[in-house]
Image 1 (tube, one colour):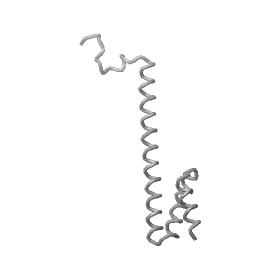
Image 2 (image 1 turned 135 degrees about the vertical axis):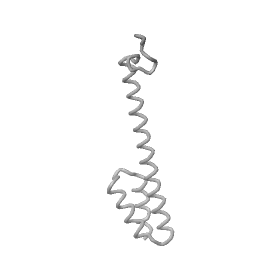
Image 3 (image 1 turned 30 degrees about the horizontal axis):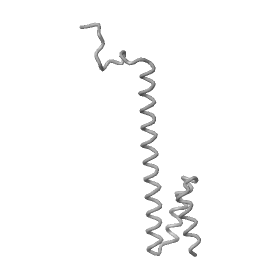
Image 4 (image 1 turned 90 degrees about the horizontal axis):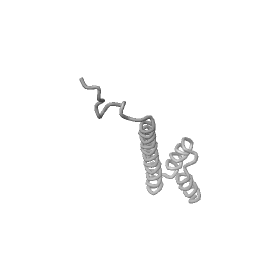
Length: 88
C-alpha cells in the first residue's frame, strides 16, 4: 500500500477546511428546518382561512389558537387570528 492518502481520506482536510464543511452542513440543516417551519405555518393559515370561508370560524380560530400556543411569535398567524376575531 502507498503512504499517500486517498483523495477521500480525512487526512487531506486541514482543520480549517473541516470546520468550514461542518459549518456549511449546519447552515444547510438550519435552512431546511426554517423552510419546513414556514411551510407548516402556511398550511395552518391556509387551512384556517378555508375553514373560516366555509362558515367554520370557531374551528378556524381554535386551530390558530393552538398554532399560536406552539409558535407565539408567528406574526402572520397572529394577524389572521386578529382579522377573524374582528369579523364578528
